[in-house]
Length: 251
Ligand SMILES: [Mn+2]
Image (cartoon, rainbow, N blue to C red; front, side, top):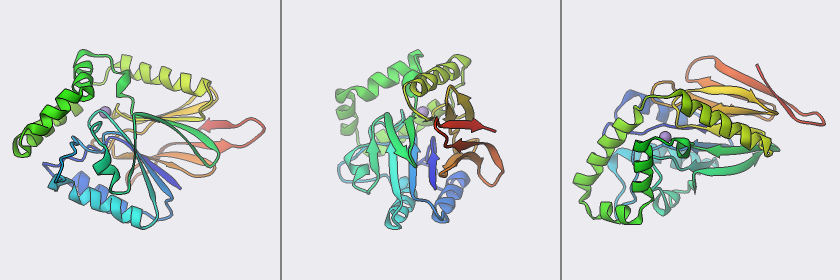
């Protein structure tokens, strides 16, 4: 069994927040899981300080370390909030990948992308420019962490409550359709904070939702894919039928 999460938005300034405690308890109690994919925005804001890790991330990093110790592989695709993740995060044993990646699980071709790069609005373009700039990254590193880190977290918290526009939902649909047309069976994305599972061409497009308002996650078994809500029934599921030509059927 493979689990997928996105947009956990762990807030290091509020490590006692109930939704975060619930997530950590949930991770600690997982059974029968082989791999976990984290599809971006796991951390509300991530910066790799040279000699420290923000104390508000200790509980979640500890939960991930425990899973890795139990032999569960954790793969992390960067989102817009944590695109500065790098060697210090990967030193915990988490496999860190850039924004788009292809994987194969149980013989199923899966394309994973957080999806923020499809957001062409001015605020997102400015954020992208800031995060891609090596100068900005280096300058941020020179701001004392007691000042820079909480300010960045407050900005990150404001940015995560963006208003979802239809144009962005459509851009995600089109991206998934194109990836499926080029051979992916399942396209799994995040960023929208809005759970979606739908048949697209010969495959399935899933948006995982988030662990802020929806508490949703995705489960892949050999023959089934479930979009689930924590402590609730399946939001939607699809059967993976293996005939001469693979068909994914949403129910
Ligand atoms: Mn995002």
